[in-house]
Length: 204
Image 1 (spheres, rainbow, N blue to C red):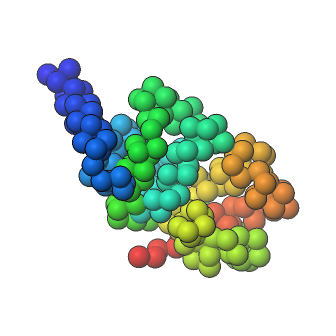
Image 2: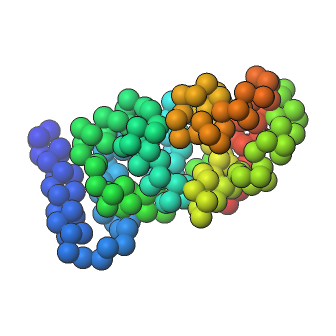
């Protein structure tokens, strides 16, 4: 029974891959849903991630952003051992796979976290956000699909803190040019406050 439960999703993925080869070249959300089975162990079936900050909420993220981030993991412009294992061990090496998963993830209802800061640095962080981040990420953290800028509204507080710190410490190669110097100018309280501001945004 256990072997059958593993084989069924795999056969669905293989079947959908053959169907894609000669069909519509546009990203297919339905095939993406089948491929997303391998992502649910970490991101959950609804794409809500984990509130302790180890796994981001990705539901409702722009398809263009999801596809870019998957490509960055594949090209080692972003580092995460679990994501690398999924991409290589599970053979998500085709751009069709990445585009289809991205199409499905973007169709999921946007998740708003319950994980927030304690509010003590909120005012300070809000001012820092509008000074340093609003120009690219938007006043409400809405980002831009066209500019490949992720939406950050409603993201887990601890995840936001971790990624801001990673960018400043040059542990996110894909953000070094755009973020490293800017983040280094922020205090710890400002970083916590920025994350708190974004985590509290509850936007449709």
